[in-house]
Image 1 (cartoon, rainbow over the protein chains, first blue to last red):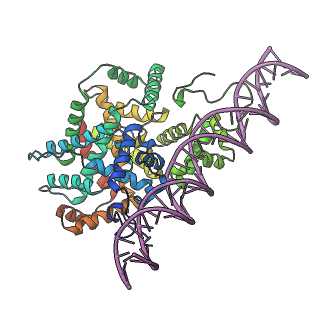
Image 2: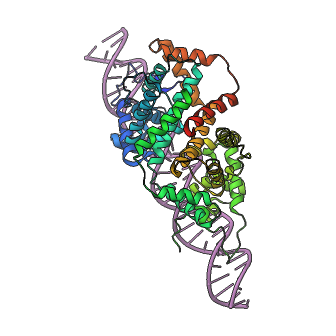
Image 3: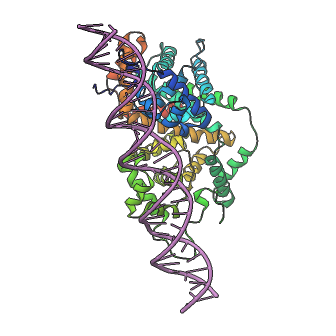
Length: 222
Length: 222
DNA sequence: CGAGTTCGCGAACGGTGTTCCCGAAGTCTA
DNA sequence: TAGACTTCGGGAACACCGTTCGCGAACTCG
């Protein structure tokens, strides 16, 4: 009856009367997470998730208004697992710590960075993370827009790092092959030099990431 | 016959013998760009692009090995339109200028940021931009990995800004509605304050963006 | 002119998100 | 307890998707 154009977080989960629902929103979210962890984002189809639950695909629409809702639920569910250590007073260090918390979750769920980058969505758990960041920035001057920027960029940068670190796909191989070709052509000596540098091993990914994050953030909020 | 697992940039466009092809890779790319500019990324289906060209969908596979190739072609085609002003010697300023060049293209093609964020692909035109950035960083110390990081982060950050600036979709409305609800609940006073700040107008998006970009980059390369 | 090769593309396959609809299963009221 | 009411489960169907197959047409080369 009602024309619900609200975010899923504001829609009541179940009706008070009538036949009670067998499953719940969290159960469906968990099933979607399991499917995604096993087969990636593409595997998260209504049919697959339904099969994971042992039901029919059409039943899911009793809990969720479409696939987009499902993805929103997944993103916010992971936000619940972000570790938010007690602030130390060192602003940049504390922000980097949040970044590491985000990165931990993204490392646990390979499909998450892509989702975070393309559909920034805020559910209850995401709001908790945002609130934490706002708390860190509380006694700084600057309007809210700048603080929201910090949050958005922190998310995006960490997701970008997470994607680049797991650069194992056919996509990255193509880029490597093509860059090798460009280097061999001799027309871009700087790129040839770049590939040389990439061949020698370096420190751990975590060290590189936290160092870059600290430099970025100190520029942004310093 | 041959098992081409090379990036499209290394595959020959047309055969030397046999019936000559009616269309060319650039023509197909242009058609895909037109479809995307008109209807967004979801509209870029093999059938739609073929219709734009007045052909059948199956014909496209003579020019492109699949939809992914088509998207790669689109991204690199836009990279050709990135304005790369002459370096001035001010490193941060020159990098910001590259960022503004990237942003210009992303503003012209609403679907581009999403593509750039989720499938970083390097074709001939993308390599030119990368080479330009490497040139700016040439007389800096630091291994190639760090310079590649600068390039990747510049792309990602600008794309993030571009996505946030055009926050008109249903998605952003949902987030706003939910944040309003959270603020009204009184449990997150900082978020209420944030929304208050967001209500008052501020400087132009361009000023905010270039300023933030300059701070970010000066932290990263300074 | 014939052999060889590529091109265009209709048809078909398996998969997708989503909607319709109806029988089943509950709750609430009398 | 009987019946009205409401929601739930999910099979079937629709429109669309990316991709493959296969064949007649079109062209180049010897």
